[in-house]
Length: 233
Ligand SMILES: *Cc1c(COP(=O)(O)O)cnc(C)c1O
Image (cartoon, rainbow, N blue to C red; front, side):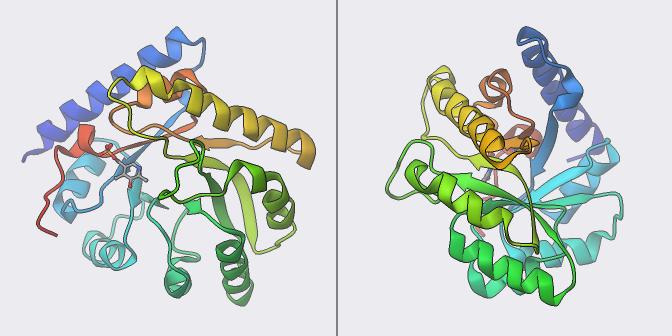
């Protein structure tokens, strides 16, 4: 696929985002698109970056290393958007601008310890299981406030906000209460902690318009930018 394919898709995604922002009285520059490139080849990332996309999200550490080694594009800001296993923490700290998926206090402590060893602070978001789904990752609503109190005390971590992946609804309008819940929880937490959380990572290809209307600051878009994911990996 050539560069114009990606330039066109990026322009379309930005246009929809601008419209959603306008509809909800927000400025477009309050929202950053994170292009989730998992399973897509490095060459697609290169083409989308050439079209002006700066933030990219990867879900698998090894895949990230392989692509980053072949790309060598300093301007890219990498986000980690997958489930992070404890044994991969040492390969993640310091390599990502932002880790979106801190889904337990245990993982937070492991990240903190590693960051301290590396004498760095890792920017993170805490993932919240907003719809209380059993099979899904993220902190339960009931444990969120307690966990955030502990996480802000970890010097190796720089808590920037919250992330969620709501249930899949055929009609994305139905996801709006879940997005609103994350935003509300974040604002409550900010009041408790005494500083405002900056980021709400919510919304994917199917429902990012709705997420922006409910206050997303980071939208994670894969398919609408890259096309369908190759399924053979
Ligand atoms: C894959 C993925 C996305 C992108 O999904 P699309 O539906 O392709 O836009 C967003 N967020 C997370 C956490 C993902 O794993």
